[in-house]
Amino acid sequence: MNSPDDMTPQQLAAMDAKYLWHPFTPMQQWIAEGDQPGRFIERAEGFELIDTHGRRFIDGFSSLWCNLHGHQVEQIDQAIRDQLEKAAHTTLLGHGSPPSIELARRLAEITPTGLEKTFYSDSGATAVEIALKMAFQYFRNIGQTKRQKFIALGESYHGDTIGSVSLGGIGLFHGIFGPLLFDVTFIDSPNPYHHRSGENGAAEILARLEEILSTGGDEYCAIIAEPLVQGAGGLLTHPAGFLKSVRKLASQHGVLLIVDEVATGFCRTGKMFACDVEGVSPDLMCLGKCLTGGYLPLAATMATQEIFDAFLARPQDGKTFYHGHTFTGNALACAAANASIDLIFESNLLDSLDEKIEIITAALAPLGEHPNIGDIRQCGMMLGIELVADRTGPEFFNPDDRVGVAVCRAALKHDIIIRPLGDVITLMPAPAMDIATLRRLLDGVVKTINEYFK
Picture 1 (spheres, rainbow, N blue to C red):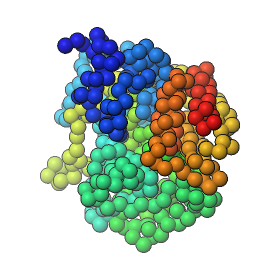
Picture 2: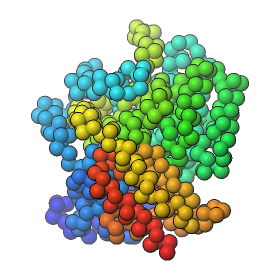
Picture 3: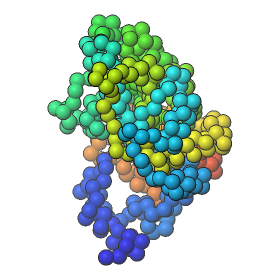
Picture 4: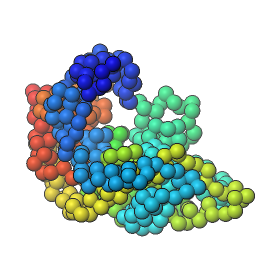
């Protein structure tokens, strides 16, 4: 059999259809559509993806929200090569490794004040699983065994393992698994457009949260939230001050605050972390996606010293955190992450974000009055453009029509790759994307929408 490098695009498509099961993909439709432009990516350079036909597309969603500096970044490539000459992987179970130790030190320096300890895993979902288990066992270890429940936001997404699904609030993704999930108390998302909640929506939601904590707060161990913006829920942005108010209520009632910065972390919101925008320090923070610059699977759950100390005891005391992953703290991934963090500061990436954010806002402004645009939601470099049948109602499209998918397919002719969340077009350009490429991406998005609905 020929190697993949020797196969035609059509042969690769046939083999894909025969052997692969793609994530979040209606496979019957995928198989029927076969080979299409932009479908099978062979290479990537800078901020472009190159398909098996040799056609180039701007990577408009950062390869699922994880690419930070672009593709084939020499500094990160070299860090991985250097580490490969030493060791690709060694376990952290009973051993340590220099790259994982160095990364833990750097994370303690750049994350919000108080987060001192790093527990590694390999994806955002596992980082969340770890956080919820830590929160639960923390209260067990300090003798508050009544605290067993969690509070989460509606339309949340925290990953696809059973614990993280329990904390999620998206019916399409999570509803079928209801019998497997543990009970969670949900409060509404504070996004005003999504729930038609108006100016007082966030205040009412916070009042509801305070009521829950005041009447049964001693039963809850943690509140979990995607800070500032809920990604998979449709890029649902939160009003200013909401996160800080949740932090205050959690502290008042002795409940831990878990922030899921898997999607929002590492420059996405205009700051290093979304928590930095409102000066919030959580008790537990979940990191992933951009942690390695988008190169390799690595996640981290950051914890305060107070939480860590609750697990310090003799083995026979039963307070050890019995959780681990085979590739915890993988050396290659940690080397990539260390190089990525270096590059953030050496390139002055954070200082470049304000200009890019303003360019995005200005470029999309003409869509604000488009009859088929219900809402444009932006938090830093994170964008959601909601498509509607009629904005005056608004009247939404029938989900079965998959309009969002159709618009993203139409974007391919403008040499851009973007993805929908239902009928919300998501834009997530790499924070390091150069301005010329960013303008090309935005111009392609505006042209695609105007042409599709003409």
